[in-house]
Structure formats: C-alpha cells, structure tokens
Length: 86
Image (cartoon, rainbow, N blue to C red; front, side):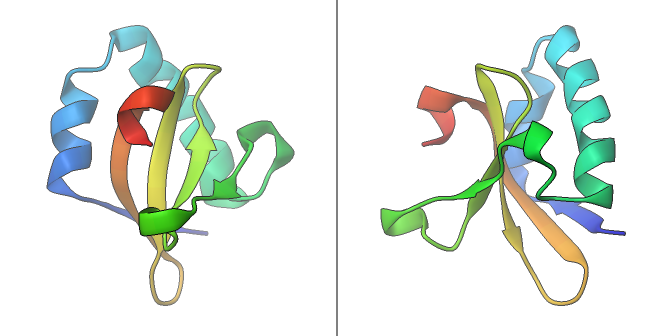
C-alpha cells in the first residue's frame, strides 16, 4: 500500500477544487493507493522538463501529478485541469 505526501502547490490547488472533484479524487485515490497503474486511472509518465513526474486522472478534466519516491512513498506535486498541470 502506498503512502502519500503532498507539496505546497498541490495543497494550494486542492483547496480551490470544486467539492465534487474533491469527492471524486477521494474515490480515485483509494484505487491509486492499492494499484497506481489500475487502468481506470489512466496513469502515465510526463515528458520534457517534468520527465520525473507521473499523472493519474480524477475525471476527464482533472488530474493529479506525482512522483514515486523511495519505498512505497508517492509525492503529489499538483492537481488541476489538464491545462493547469501540464
């Protein structure tokens, strides 16, 4: 099972999310913790300057960017719409 840590940018953007998206994210995070590559999440690696980061989908519009750290730790770097987090 994964342990999740969050960065300042993620926390600031999370507070601004609509409540509906926060609830969807909680459900997706349960899936993510058990299997970060579950096909329902659409998990994929980013490229370019953010090549060390990954992303999973909350829904069609919203995504969470993250990094795998040592062991079972995942660090959430950002959350928002596709245009905001890419």
